[in-house]
Length: 459
Image 1: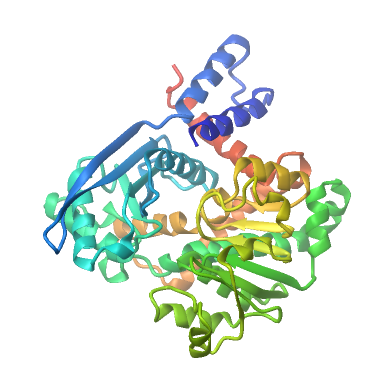
Image 2 (image 1 turned 180 degrees about the horizontal axis):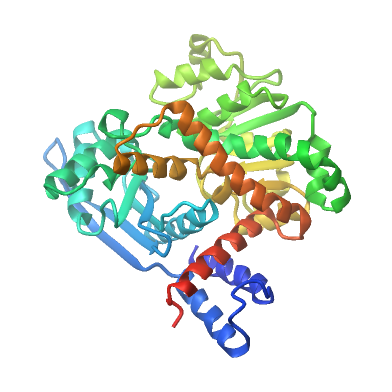
């Protein structure tokens, strides 16, 4: 992953080196030195914090759980990023995710830097009391490095508003008399959280797809027909046609994304497959997504995966292996599960013409290159799944300004923010040979580099 981070930075800087509009004051030898400095600064984190949380389980056993907080870059503002509760968490992964948060905030012009946290646990294996202790211990161990103007954690995979409420409460205990509401985002509304935060990432994921395939083509169809871009051909071939959609993952992100697709009035979507850790559900005529959302809400987030459970849910579907969702004959595949789901082993079996990354890094670099060469449109994580951090920013603002936005206002602000980013990036994407992911990276690195140069951090 660290090699991938360095590659992203270097490829972006290589693309910018000959752009005379970028850092025009730097020429020849000073320019080369500055670019070398940028490569070093952006490809490495500022700080890596790690510890072992000492936890007394309810049965009396003591365990020590590895925990991390990586602070990548704060040139644009306080570090910002979620805390992941998952058994696969490791230092390398958290470093990479913190780097991607820096790029994501830069891309969407959110005044935060990039950070990320992780705890090596499977939340399903711990009681609520034990998870409460894990959450409080995390704050105790990292209290000196987090805070409303330092580093602002949020939920991530395996954590949610419950854990953020616990953590904010512990931060308040540790830092009496200091501002605390902005110390964590993704909290419950009663604790200063924002309406719409839970749905924000999933809604943002679907919005990027909808905006590209509907709003953008509506306005730019004649121009797209003249570009000669194989990506434009893919988009135009699907324009105004019925689209078969599959969604991998049915948690907070995937379920909201699937529901948005099911209800969308702008496109002729039919969600024919969804999956989770247990199974893929398939119905060629379209799945009853609202009923599946209702079922998972009452069954610990799990989709029905037996015939008896399907009957209980009232949903008509065929039960398939959980990985079958990836290789189905669909137009659109939305990835909202884990990293590295599309890779060298299955890249040639992917039939979708559009892939939307609701998860972080679900397509490996090798698979990404292969699919882009085939003209597959991949809306990358850095662009598609930024809804959570954008609404976290709105939550942080509401806490500082003691005001409260309605859910309607939140979603309008979210869509306006993401639309502004799309309007900046999409013309470049369809007008040059770079992939959409590369265009996002280049734009982010360009903005960060300019800020670092103006702050005098390249000397």
